Image 1 (tube, rainbow, N blue to C red):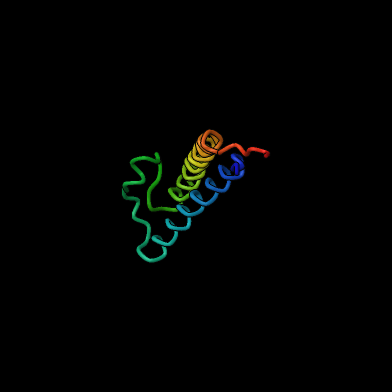
Image 2 (spheres, rainbow, N blue to C red):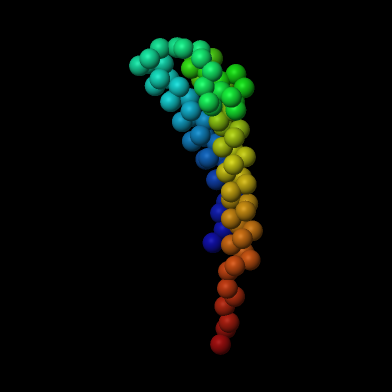
Length: 90
């Protein structure tokens, strides 16, 4: 079975980007905007716990998830095609 590379890449990007966006707003709702540098902010430039930072997180998360999903599906398809047994018609 092969994975659809484009579909997995797009769905991974959407899930990761929206997940980071929603998590940021969850923190803002309960603790307020801090604007402090976070561990994620060290990787994703411009990200912090603020309204603007949530937009940066959405964009970076989508891009990161898109690339990660693409690589995962591509590698899976490469390895799955090499290890799939051939059927003998006898």
